[in-house]
Length: 444
Image (cartoon, rainbow, N blue to C red; front, side, top):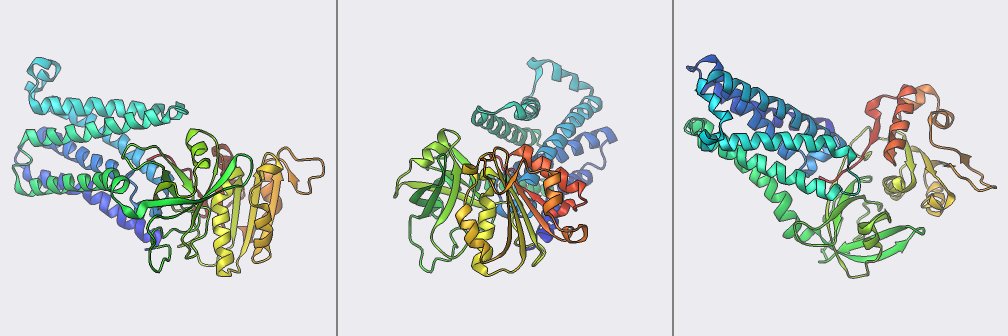
């Protein structure tokens, strides 16, 4: 399915999840006072928002392919904010519609539905506060993530208990069926994400074939399926050039995992390659793996690929450091397919040793209509390429004329600051934002 149609389908699905229960509650409570109706409907709408907020980060391939992981996480945050606002409105309307609601301020008089609802609200407020602090977390991200997941799970459970113990909604047959379907949807998505995939899906079991050194701190991990598949055509991981996957070296649910771009091309071979810079304990551990060691892969994900977009459009690939990994996957795929479109690769690094795949790029350049521009911020004395960062001045110099450059597709990958600067520079050059593609994946 094309990305545009997939986005439309997902938008309709999310709208149905949010609106359908609210419309049913409106019909069911049409004889109640207006404030009571608004209180109930705001709570039901909040439940629909919660379901959508749970679904978005649960690694649904069609969703991440349609939107891209950046947009998926953005939608997740937006839904979380709307959920908090709707819950606050729900609490205000409950207090306004029922004089006895003042007992909410006296813990000794809390009923079971009240306890569940108050607990869910407190958990949601804490969850939102934790999300606001996300940008301040660096080395302790794993702890932040597990606290975030625990709070999210508590909010889901307590919300379900709140609805169940209130009874007046689930006593209505259409609403009971609707809430049952929503509960089954949440349980199914979460079970697939947290139980089936990490513990039982045999297609995700791989083993190390080779660990190949690229530079002093960059290695390429080559893996193959642990169980040979007859007629292998990458069906175990039908990825597109530029997509990524999560890697883990343990089978248990809580095993540490990290996302990495797939560097190989989907060419019908058993091997899948990930080029990784050693920047911590996990990536350092990957470099120490030996042939035959087991690894588990969850993927592919993402929309950082030219497949499914305008056919035969020229490409501009802008990469810094190890951000070249999705670009090398794209170039390898183009070379294998004998693609004749024009490609411009702008590759930047600090030193010449950090420029990856240089020899291979020269060979690929003989097979494709590839223009390679290399730039270093700390070049050696006899450096033949460009010097400095990848910025607007460099892009204006290497891109084609105004009319031609507006017809190209742009892919940018590298450190966040570099990506932001390049996107800003391209927008200043009047490049349509829809033609600029980035992917800053996170742990979801």
